[in-house]
Image (cartoon, rainbow, N blue to C red; front, top):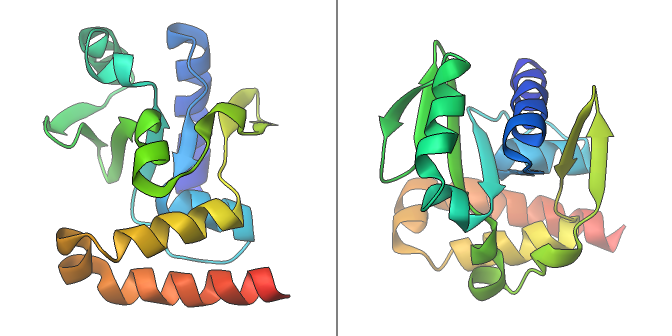
Length: 156
């Protein structure tokens, strides 16, 4: 719950200061969508690519003003005490896993607006992730386990 609450704070900040509605991604997003515990270790966000390119300095400044320090430029990863946030771009969803990011539902919680994927979207992404060499070596067991759970949820 601590990670989710921090996500809500970041989402509010992104809404207000950057005019972004972030997509809650990764295990924390999957947990929110399914209501199941996936023991997320960090917060994964997807935002428009422009904020990782032309507007990067603005994004970085906002994160720093909220106590986050950039720890990995390539991965756009920030850290504050024990909380890690990884940021990537939402436009990659379509070519990567054929997920239409243009029509995602907007959720509101605690004054924050954000997007979530559907269970079907997550299934597409994790299936595609299994083909990725890095993820297969590092997270194969986790990804396959999530696929199995998602398949069960879809069947029920």
